[in-house]
Amino acid sequence: MQLNDPFARLPEVPGFTVTSTTEAFPGGDTSPQLSWSGAPMGTKSYAVTMYDPDAPTMSGFWHWAVANIPATVTSITEGTVPEPAIELPNDARVAGFAGAAPPAGHGPHRYFLTVHALDVEDIGVPADGTPAMLGFAMSSHTLGRATLIGTAETPGPERIEVSRLIPAPADAIFAVLADPKGHVDIDASGMLLDAEGDPVERAGDRFVVHMDREALGDVPLGKYDVEVVITELVPGEEIAWTVEGQFQPPVRHVYGYRLAPADGGTLVTSYYDWSRVGEKWRERVDFPVVPESALKATLGILERTVRRRAA
Image (cartoon, rainbow, N blue to C red; front, side, top):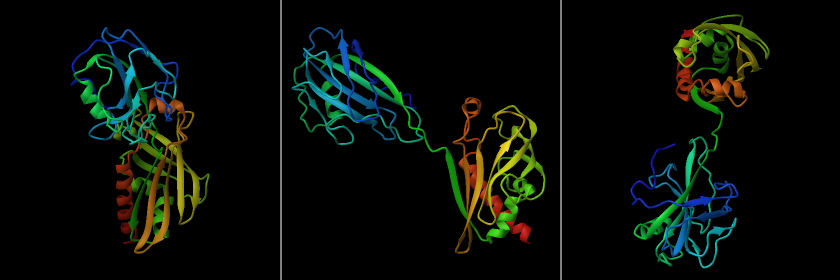
């Protein structure tokens, strides 16, 4: 979330009170109920706007803009605006309200829902004008503002996938992935020090990995052992696993590889899924533990390892 204040470049004006009996920042396209009081003397009309300064644009995102609300009006019901007020096209180019819907994974966005008290009955903006045009017109006519600030966030996918064409047969690549020491050989995080166990053959097989968490520096665990538990195994096609250690309950994040024949070799997709991680672990650890860049690096190391083992 950005720290920019959409009112920072505007003249300071007195505040007054605005409240809502409904969720003021809904995700649907029904405008909220609003009530306000304490507007400055001399108020001749109101305007209402909702603006997201954290949108991934150079100009934010206008969700709602209503002009020419009579000074006798001090509340609006959900989904309506009073006559003769006009709703301007929002940044979705629809004359009405667009609910909060930040892009998935972009983090929390702030929504400034503001009632503007104005010293003119008609602000002079045409019905097809933009919210920015309304803002410009209001800049010299604003007597006061009342603002509610809410936040909304759309969670991003709790899974990362990256792919690489490796010029080798699937069996040779799979042999590295099924070998406990192969996991150490291709590790790009620096956490895996060594491994003990036989090559895995089926779901449910396990092997031990000696870890050094200081390589990440995120949790002060130092050196410790974990068991890698195979959750899925189709020879030459897919292998996936989770990790169990001394702490309970297990974290339940899943790592895996899918292999598919392709011109020039095998298309290898590495994935990391933390959608089943419990709240206890989400509170203690920032996910993903391994970033996308590390998965990409591991695929490069995997290609190098396969080539060296074949030499």
